[in-house]
Amino acid sequence: MGTVVDDAAAAEFHAFFEAHYTELARLAHLLTGEADAADDLAADALLALWHRWDRVRDAEHPGAYARGVVANLARTRIRSAVRERRRIALFWMPRGAGDAYTADGPDVSAVVDVQEALRRLPFRKRACVVLRHAFDLSERDTALVLGVSVGTVKSQTSRGVAELQRLLGPETPAAQVQVAAAGQRAGGRH
Image (tube, rainbow, N blue to C red; front, side):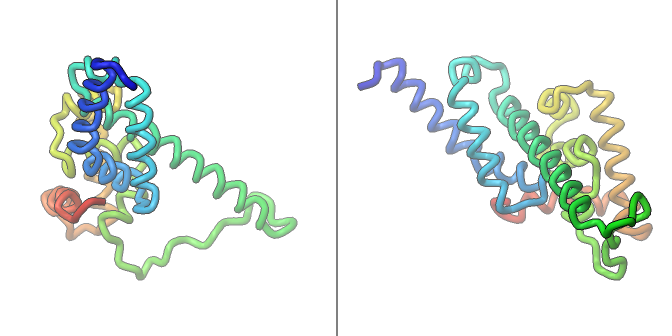
């Protein structure tokens, strides 16, 4: 049977879990573009937080700390997926094709939605755009979550929005890109 301190810590963590799980799963989904992985990443992040709960609960911004854990887990997942795709591409490359072999590009005639465009952004730009526009975090809070400077957040967000505009087409102004990214927030759990 646990001590009073253990029970109090468990109750605090349970309240933190209830308050932040959905947000963390949505963040994981927007960062990875994988709805199936979002719940797993959020759960893995919360498990890591539980193991360090004594430090997390004393942190100045435990929610930002949790988002940072999710961002790091998402980055690791994306890197693993990229490495796996490269291995598969090398395995299935025709003999003698060498460096000239390239995979078929995306279907240019397909409509590119915001989630697909987000998936195509480099991780840091994607994370900055998602945290700033879909989660309405300040530049300071975004910098805290990602462990970068406020200047990096400003430049990566600006470049990310510009790249989204390029990917979505010239008729999509920045305001529409930002509204579409924010619309992901209202779109449900993921």
